[in-house]
Image 1 (cartoon, rainbow, N blue to C red):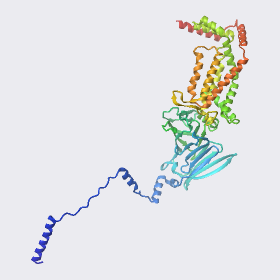
Image 2 (image 1 turned 30 degrees about the vertical axis):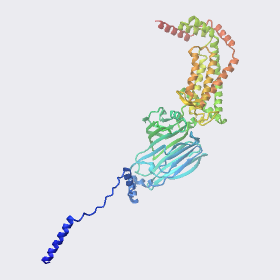
Image 3 (image 1 turned 90 degrees about the vertical axis):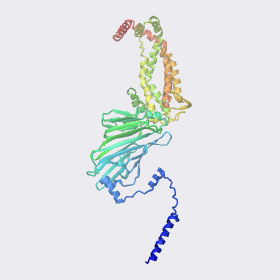
Image 4 (image 1 turned 180 degrees about the horizontal axis):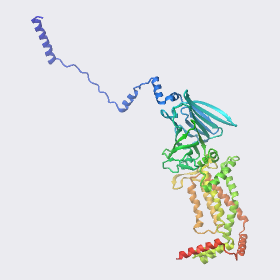
Length: 596
């Protein structure tokens, strides 16, 4: 390159440089679009749209084998539902874990006339688990193959469902059986082989049950819903007598546990005993749930096998009594001094009369007549005792005028008079006292009688609850927001009977007026009790009133007075008995101490 060429190139480069520095504009930058800010929800949604990595089947199988070991093939399957059914119950079971899905009592309806599901998969959760070499194994993780058959044992048809899950290493067999006419589902769990897979000899069981409301009166249902259990020492215990949450660890082995509501019980019964029992109950705020109950315990296994039984049925005393020892205690028959009336008399009367009469109102009337007829000798003696006190009232009035200010002397002279006349002041009360167990027994029987459930009579649509004859637009304290006509009839009949009875006795003052106060008090108490109970008391009052009217026709006060005078003549020179003498001495000593 010569000098001229070099000079030209330098000048050209200088021109370009000067132009670029002073005349040429910078490169045009396109406007930046504003990106809207994403919300947390959009970010979360976008993140969910990102497909997760799908593991190959071979890797899934490896993970399953690591978690379950020899049981891994049993965790693969498809859930199916199998039904065990007889004339009493319909039990739906799942092939996944052999779990109860639903139990329906076919003879009954819920308060809104829907099928009565005693439990379902949403309200009741049962879990059976075993300890294995890979940790705790929940049976719900296994799939079983079903085989439903029907066998005939001594003329009794029985459905048998066998659920089997097995490999070349062994089998797990769960068997359910349901006899015709029974509310009991028997279950057995057996492990065949699987050497070294399972450890321990106990099945861990938990049952969490949200007891569904089957009755319209939720308050009464909650009052009578309890978690009952029966100890191996033959002692009946329970939780749920109040609304406060309760928990208990039972140290002693347990024979059975029952989640018992007002008319129905779902229970589990041990073949031997349950161990390490933990129970709890609480009252939820949900109006569709009566109570929440939970039980957890261990079921002993012997030679790789364990058996239990489930009861799903009504609280009928005679039905429960045939289940197992003490199971009939799920029905509250009252305190010991009245329960014998219900257990040995009323239950059998109901069962007998049900064979011939369809109306439970008629059955209640017949029970009243039968009991009143059986107790009529006591009623007669009570009337005669009160009549004797009535005919000697003039003598008693004379003593009151003479010794009215000296109570001790008055009592002593009255005792002498009674002894001379052959009259006992308790002769009229004692027969009534002997009739009291029958009166109070009904107070426990009718609120728990499933026989009366949804049975109508006259204006009462359901004898197991109150008859709402009038619905009040307001609530009366201690009475309610309705009027029970049967309760009103019972109250009126009791007041009439009291008025009639006061004419036959010598009662005066507060004791006389007490007979009018009690019926009014019971009107408030029984207004929300079953209509069957109020109807029974009403019919009982009417029959008792009629009995006394008939007795009065055949009992002449003049003849009673003649017998009293005859006794008086015989006992003129009668010596005091040792008991009478001791009683008088005690009264004199008490009077002396009072004066001191």
